[in-house]
Amino acid sequence: MYPVSSQKKSWTFANESQLLAFRVEQNSKYIGEHDSECQDSDLEEFFLTPAEERLLLKQYEVYLFDFCRRFDPPMPKCVVGTAFHYFKRFYLNNTPMDYHPKEILATCVFVACKVEEFNVSISQFVNNIKGDRNKATDIVLSNELLLIGQLNYYLTIHNPFRPIEGFLIDIKTRSNMQNPDRLRPHIESFIDSTYYTDACLLHTPSQIGLAAVLHAASREQENLDSYVTDLLFVSARDKLPSLIDAVRKIRIMVKQYQQPDRDKVKAIEKKLDKCRNQANNPDSELYNERLRRMYCDADYLPAGGCLFSYC
Image (cartoon, rainbow, N blue to C red; front, side, top):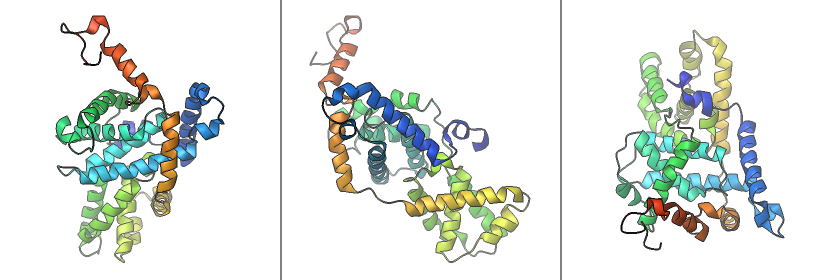
């Protein structure tokens, strides 16, 4: 249950300022460790700023959703929600300059498939990725333990889908609304929109679910205010003000979301190519050298020689 879960205890935060503080801290930490690479350039011109990192990650959240939407076989919505949780959590503890989001994105989805018991093999999984699939396999599998460790091994995610079903059943049973199932398309659209916000790091699944239901009702010219005040919270009116405030904040977050400017993102990606940690860049010589040291140590060589042909 969510009230006693690791999600509530370790991964639900008080406000957006707290999230910003985590992100700025990771950005500053990386710059402090790599400032010698800057040479004669100004630090802000060479490294990504926290605002640039946020814009970049917002674009990769769009890519993440599109990847899940096009996945074959069709992906359950709980896998999508869990993958977004993992992606957002990872970048509270890390900066895109250290780990490029294009590599972490696929790993988040792959681990989410496992946790939510959506049974796809690694070969099936990488068939959904364009480009070098052998390389994609190596990247996903090599980042899997990294991701799990950065999540502090807290992998169980409480998505809002179960609360939503509970609300719809309750509305059918106790309210006067006709055919509440007509709310579903608007609910699904609203939940999809929350993935591009920090709602899952700030609010409970039931709050997000109720915000989706109330949004859907308003789109259908229905009013559920009396259902919430007179039926849903009739025995817990003291909790009503905080719930109303949470629902309002979630709906504002969704309403205020803006798609990232693609031209700005392209400029940020070019900047990232120069300032990213080459030790974690699969295309860099430093990364390959690290692999050579890892796998070509004499103590670990198989009888026939090195595990890789280039050793």
